[in-house]
Amino acid sequence: MKSKILLLVAVSAGSHAAVAQTIATSAPITDIRYEVTFTRANAERRVVSPVMTFTVGGDAAVILSLPSWTPGAYEISNFARNVSSFLAEEGGNSLAWDKLDPDTWRVRPRGAGEVSVRFDYQADSLDNAASWSRPDFLLFNGTNLFLYPEGRGFDFPASVSVNTETGWKIATGMRSTGARTFAASNYHDLVDMPFFVGQFDLDSAQISGSWVRFATYPAGSVAGGARIAVWEALKRVIPAEVKVFGEVPWNTYSVLQIADPAYGGGSGLEHQNSHVDVIGPGMLGSPVMPSLYAHEIFHAWNVKRLRPGDLWPYKYDQEQPTSLLWISEGITDYYADLAEVRGGVIDAAGFYAATGEKISEVADLPPTALEDASLSTWIHPRDGTEYVYYPKGSLAGLLLDIIIRDASDNRRSLDDVMRELYNAAYKNNRGFTSDEWWSAVGRAANGKLFTDFYARYIDGREPYPWDAVLPLAGMRLARDTLNEPRVGIGTVQDSSGVHVTEIVPGSAAEAAGVQPGDLLLAVGGISATDPTWSLKFRTKYARSPEGSPLPILVRRNGREQTLEARLHFASRVESRLVEDARASAKARRVREGILRGTTRP
Image (cartoon, rainbow, N blue to C red; front, side, top):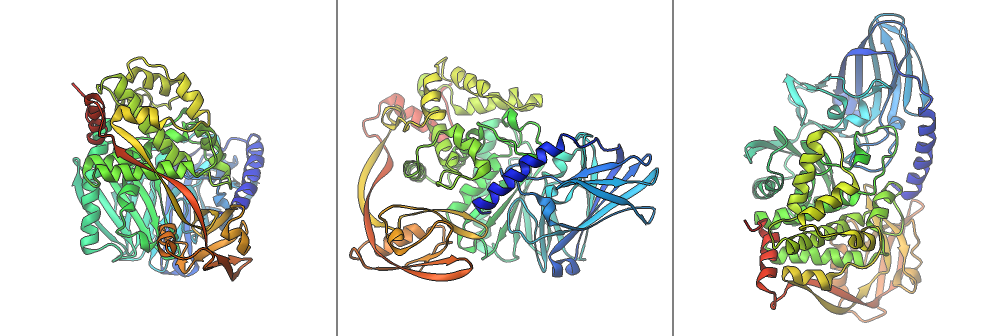
């Protein structure tokens, strides 16, 4: 979604919050049931048709709302804009209704009895948090379709039935109660378990004592040796992550994956016992995929269960910002790397390479405090920092892990911090605070204070102290100066493509007339939706003369244009994480502890 649109919906969301304060509490309702219909007829119109049925005790108004966002996707999406043909009925007769705010409906029953509310929902958004259909397939999220009664809390049980074509499959993390019927004990669970409906591949295996399912659309997109490789990766990363917390928090876990050529790059969205990946076909079989799986699965512990108090409980009608999102996302990204190296998906060199790439990525962005980046994600800053809390938060995790292990002579680690908070906060049905996080970090580090670390590197914008901390783990940064071809643009990618957000002064892009807001299609004949396009660009033009022709293909105002640029070279310092040959015995123990997930007895 483009930043301009996001800014507009943020304003709208603020207005909604003000209105919501005046909305009356809904009349009580019981026996809540949802039916979701998706057939070939629905697919032709790219709609899914939900019905909510419930019992009322009188003629008091029932006030129903649809969420404005999906937890994990930190943006206001205003799902109600996709609703059409809204209808309320009781005893076969239509009921009067009106709207109280953009995503809230007031229904007026005629008396005690059973009420049904139905509508069509446009399922044409290829996004993890949305609903998307094809002639033989549907992804839907409960936040898109399932209304809730205002002011009545979220602890009500509900059932879901799916009406679809004979022979079409259903995959979801929701508990099955019969043929195509499911149940959830509360609304939070109800909307946290997305569905695949249609024709797709589905198989399962036992990992760490529980069943894991792998559903992939379109059928045949991940087959043969490629599918075996996915299962091998899952069987390696999941046990490594289970070891951190000491328990498997799900009965079953479902990996739900869509590959579609209309999607550039790849993304995942976590849920308590599943996650949804949406990727371009070019990512299938790439080394990025195990990392994506490891990241989203680790979220089953860190964010779906252990999460900041600002996000506990979820509120569905307004933004819910937290300055601790770098812990939920960045620390999770660190553990995705750890799961890969501890599980044997990558070796130590692979871990160093992944970490080095993050160091270079952060260095190339404007200095940004982790807490500021965590808060700003809701408005998607256009300076390239909207997701910096991922790599920078991951690197903060590495620094803290090293400091804790060094201070405790490798007897404690960041794993201990995660376990302590998981048991203290999540197991007591609450979120954690910043003070609790830093207190746990200090205890793990043998009483060391992190006041200065927090002020300089978390709340502050100072560069990380690599040269001081890495040697404690038998590592160091090797720095190389490279003269390489550069386009000179900043971009952000979403389901509609790669959007230009920034133009570097004096760059090839500026001279060619590239503008912020352009949709970048290709550079030098290399598709911008290729996740490795910048590497391919540098490789292709590394030996070309300065000033060589460089065509840049963009779409501007709906029209494709080829802008004639001239190749420009610029110097860049590349940092590589390497092992320190002079490391002490203690530093080597710390390094091995990080890579293997071990501590001293």
